[in-house]
Length: 471
Image 1 (cartoon, rainbow, N blue to C red):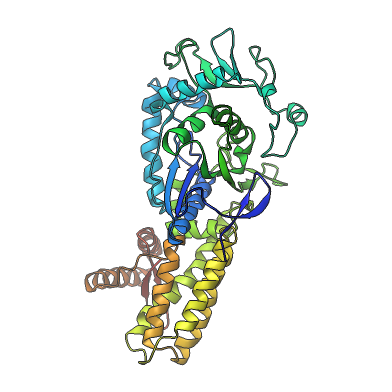
Image 2 (cartoon, rainbow, N blue to C red; image 1 turned 135 degrees about the vertical axis):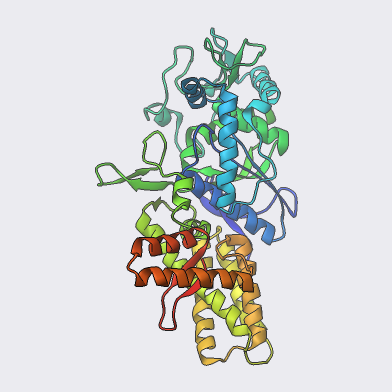
């Protein structure tokens, strides 16, 4: 079964055929770095981390580029409030981005370009757009893309120019010839950060940075362009126009967009997109203080990436519980191997699960169905463990397959074993917690449990006494 991707451009599932056999060029729109990243950002980051992981798992050589918008109105405003240079502010939040990204288990992209470091490339592209007759210089020194020069604006959203004009989503600007025209170069305002250009001091428009970065690092045409579906209009629509005005060929063969993470509206009667502008966001840092990396990844990946997802701690708790069943099965298999009966491995059954996993992922990266395969494996292996009908060779192959799948999903704890030193330390903590409970010092007993959980372990009471395990 060949990989099929839902292409926003055609609104259909299409077989994936890379431009160059065996290689994939993928660009994913990153964040505007003026604050800590929130869970809405985390969804897109984890989705495209998974996409890159699966493409590599499938044998492709992937070049993955994700940008930082480090020059922007919001950055300038926040920097002015703090009395610092805008690039100093953005550098601080880029560092924080990488800290949170690592905690989310994100594999780093190959390249992280910044708008401020691509000014020469941006100016060069703007000049080419002007020379090709698709942009004009306004009286204030700004440069605007002239949408009247193109025939198929709105192809990603499948809307006409007339419907876009009447949508109410276009900001008024006295320097524009047409309300839909957009800035590819913004003339500097007094006191703003700026760079010299043929049109006077200014800075890049939002959309142009991505077109210039793609051209610089990946070439005129790429395989996959990704981002949240809130970027389809106007950002990705405008990227297409800018690039095609220069290259005269499609920017990307496949456009992928993840669904938004939503929260209950303030009236609690409807959902709305999680965003900083609405003040309804939850930072990755705060969420990870309560829930582990793998719980957050499972929470996002247990839903198809295109589907909307409503945020709530009750849903994270459900994800934690569901993931716990997979992790427990993994640990049970590890323990079972020690005295499992000898015999050959059931290679046919192992391969059937591998095929089911790949079939799910090949159908537009359907991680929900792929995780469903892992739950089916857990149910079957739990029965076999209980009946002691699984051979050691099969159990070892089963564990190897789980680890193989996890190179794509990143939801199973690292296989570090249970060394004697760790067992000794955990035994001390268990004994201390039990003594505190005997003395009715429940707050301190709970504190030990919570701190142990923060470190990636759980303490559980059972008929045989307290036990610990990795989570």
